[in-house]
Amino acid sequence: MNLVTGIESTDLFGGEVPPAARRLIDAARGAAHDEAGAALWTTVLAFPQCLPPYYLLYKFHASRGELKLAEEVACKALAVAAQQASLARDWRTVQPDDADFSKPGPARFWLFTLKALAFISVRRGEHAAARALVGKLRALDPEDRLGFGVVEALLEHSRSR
Image 1 (cartoon, rainbow, N blue to C red):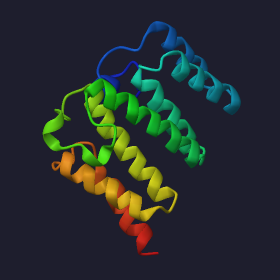
Image 2 (cartoon, helix red, strand yellow):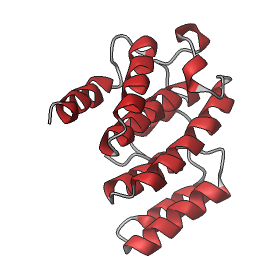
Image 3 (tube, rainbow, N blue to C red):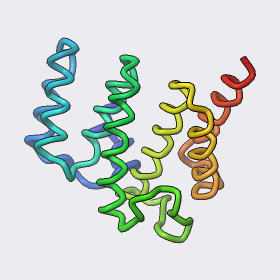
Image 4 (cartoon, one colour):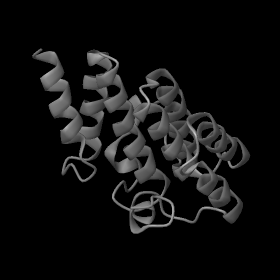
């Protein structure tokens, strides 16, 4: 599903992507790696308060195995979403009643990005960091609506190897 125009985008992030940002994202689709990366970075830099392009950019880098870059983008996304959702900048201090993480919008995006950081940590072999992130996800999303259980299973599998 198209994250920017489809239902999934609204369910996770809420709000609309500005038309100019959408044009840049569309330019990234099907483009060569360097051109796609440049278009996504341009989108994030030109629209720093628009959350979906951050997701696309950290997913882009993660899918290419560029985990350090994916982590850097996800951390920027987390900071922007925290500001928009009025959450603490330090994810470790966020509490379940600080926001409604079940509704589309910045708080839900923030939680989704926390899950992405946990996944990136597992892939980078940073098991202690991944465990801490999964623990926070469990506290904030005890029903596992965003699927942190998948990351938790990957973490357990990677530890048993």
